Length: 323
Image (cartoon, rainbow, N blue to C red; front, top):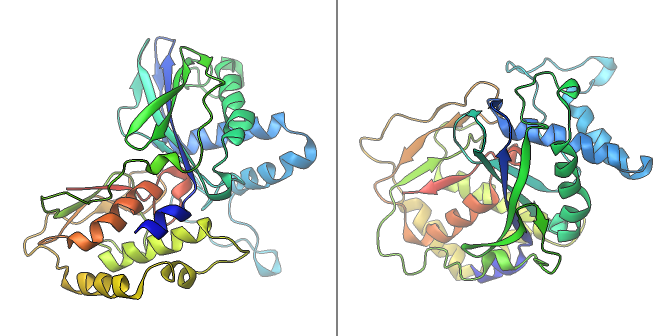
């Protein structure tokens, strides 16, 4: 497992917005709204040349691009249209599950993850934090509803992960300029399943997922999705899943394959994952159960839950907890 961890560049920010008006109503999927609004602010702040990739990414919200002959593909059944990717940097916006309505003084908590070549604290300081500061000043006239969060919150705090700890970066609106997180501290002290003496039998999807169209994905499918996700951390122009597998010793690969073959769904499983909520990306959400999840797979599953797997990870899709 250690060759995997040493390849991963990741910075995790925990962001706390404190509502300063009587009522704020979040959309059904806040991450899509956060991504679009903050991305637009970033693009507006940048010179034309630097803004171009941001504008191009935001243009994906207009719908599917035209195919051969100038004919646009048939739009997906879900409305509104949600692009498969967004932002020209590798980022995940994970808004913690909770209620949609917030009142004066209540906190909206979410996590921003910068990955791969984008795991650079200067990107946060130059692009993301200023965009959030501008979002604080948005007037009701600039939004479609006075109940939107924009212009109705203060940035109370921002924390940076060091293993299981969250260290303060912004506190009561003040930035600690001496805090310079790097792309390796996220893993400090994490054991990835080592020393855990209790069995795991369930995967509870915290956000919707889309893994090869499988409503109940096999553990092999989840592992393959992790391998595909890991390619963003490897050097070179187009690293492949084979390059990721090469990081694992042959003996360990054999152990993993034997563990995957021994994993069996529970004889009387809970109801299968259901369709993702309306206006959410991803396809399914829910719980899947096994007689037991082989302990050899736990480190890789824990890593998959941190990195997010499958499609539309930018919006927080594809994370889960082990039970």
